[in-house]
Image (tube, rainbow, N blue to C red; front, side, top):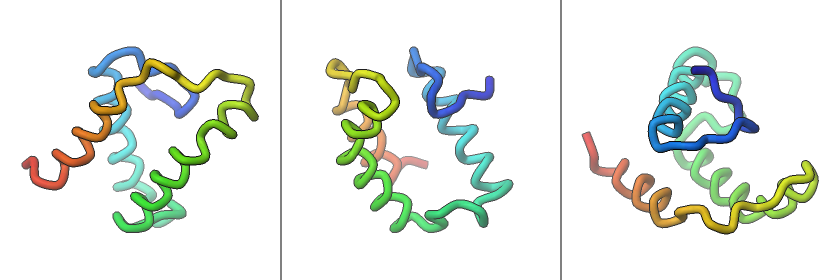
Length: 83
């Protein structure tokens, strides 16, 4: 399943697939990514999340109000120690 950033991720399984595809993209062409190390990637992630209301407005979409922000925060934290 090849998801793009504009596709709707509707389940945990789809999110897992998306993250795995993202990793594969990094392994194939990470040298082309703007943020090639974890420090830059996390800084860009925080910056985009901060600015995301503008992105949603620019593309004519509503910022998801009911998102499970705790899930994402827990997943990011867990990845620092999970094997």
